[in-house]
Length: 214
Image (cartoon, rainbow, N blue to C red):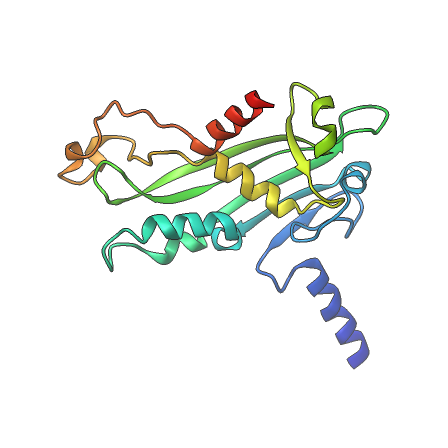
């Protein structure tokens, strides 16, 4: 009885039940995990789908960015509730060529971003959504990728799905962060940015500039 119990606990841990990540998997069971590295060809061949929800705090890189932004607020003005905001993730792996030469991932990630509005310096909650359409290729093969896909450059043989999710959200983050209207801002909003201030995505723009140089 004890032996069976230990086997069950080990199985649940491998599935991620002790990591705070609750995922539904399709295709080959246990062939992939949001937090496990895997060969892109393996993920594509099994047509792996990762459909899950995690907490914002499970995304380490983007959590650090938000923490740094909110640190500018006076003590007590911020809230830690943003860490528990759900992040909806759907990734689908496949091949983009019949020859199974190029593995790819498509999908969508969405959540709510807690940021500091640059008009009023108050917190604002903004919807954050990113669509993914990457071919997963080694850096040396970058020039051979397809025009309707972005390139995820592999620096090693395996890929970590969580890193793809974080990168997509980072590039989708708005800058400057603003309330949707001045009516939602604090009383001194006009002292910072005009209503016509344009929202850009610096990470995406930087990536586009780098692409033009290559």
